Amino acid sequence: MIRSGELLASWGEIQAAKRIHERIEEAWRSYNSAITTPYPYWRPFYPDGLKSVSRVVDYLAHSFVLGHEIGHHFQTLEPNDDIILAKTIADAYHADAMFEPSQSGSGPKFASFFRPPIDVKLNEDGVFDGQATRGRFLIGSLDQINEQQKSELFCDYFAFLAISLNSASRSVPHSDVIRSLVLCIEGVEKLTYLTKTMLRTPRLTRRCAVRFDDGHGKLRIGFLLYLMEMSRTSNPKVPATLHDYWSKITPESAKLIEMYKSQYGLNSIADMTTFLARGAFCLGIGMPFPDLPAKPESGSEGVLEMASEAFLIPWRFPSNIYEISRNNGWNPDQRGDPSMIGFASAVANAVSCVFGHGLEFRNNRKEKEAAVWLVRSPRARLLNPSERGVDRRNGRKQRDATRR
Image 1 (cartoon, rainbow, N blue to C red):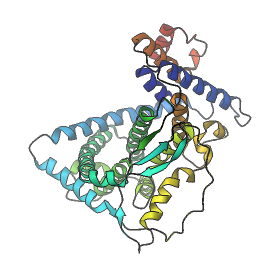
Image 2 (cartoon, helix red, strand yellow):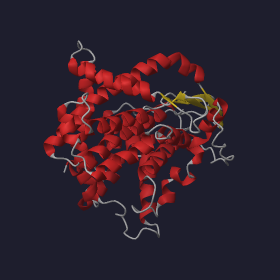
Image 3 (cartoon, rainbow, N blue to C red):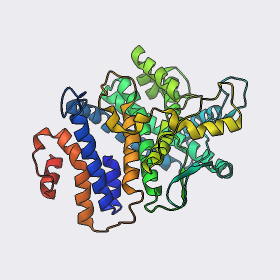
Image 4 (cartoon, rainbow, N blue to C red):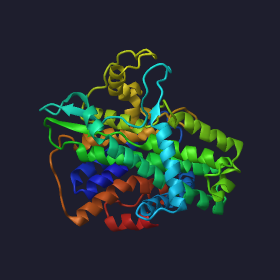
């Protein structure tokens, strides 16, 4: 929610950013006043642990981004041995993983990493009016998407190389590297869907269609897990520096790889972000949570059956995943992914804060900065408990507290 407020403020939608801030404060008050919250204000947050994890992710994320951008630079150069190796590995993985068998093993094969965009339609009153699959758009853009995916895998190879070398030099545990790599891709995917959803949400109630494109998170995480497995063995394709680090992986970290492979491998709905973003948008514009028909039989895998089920996937998740206030009793020992609850709730709240409120753009730099600091203030209070009493209406005090 903080990120959505930052986006709106940077676009000049100051009033919408203020509405986001009010939602954040409301959610926080609800959480801390809940009977199921045994430790008011803090639980389940652990600021010291949060900052510790952030430091690990921070320097590994820098390596990942640097390596990925180096990969884009290499794409402009004449091929050498490293470039040829990266391209060979990326293209081979993409070719093997592009088509996956049906779950029953007897149905048709279909593209694992290609799904057509889905349009959510609104009528002239801005009310949900159904969904439409844009298969013709996918067919026309298939070659372009194919090349884009292979290009991203090529660059992710160098990102993996950079993060592995950095981790080896710092003796970072393999488990931290595995989680950080997955976290990097998931974070990029969530930010992309949040930004696109906010941009495409109509500010006026009118007839329109809001498009939700397919993401590449499942493909990219699957490729990184594939590189980890390849680097563990004495595969001649892998540089010795990679093998030296990944060959020392512990059994516990190897199990972590297997767990992520089960989530992001073939026949898995790993990229939940696309479905949650679409469901959150529908709820954010005021659509009630629908009653669902029964799930199709496991052997029912025709094209029409798969297409119709794709429309319903957002509603296969529990309804409370879209409402953060209904998760006040959550604790770290429970199953589930709190980051997905946070993402879905944030998108739903952000959409409701802009949909139907009209156009309200301002281009005043000071107003934008003040709005950004306003929506960031709850995070500053969380990570700097000594600053709880600071008057956040004073922009200078707010900036000084955040800098500390």
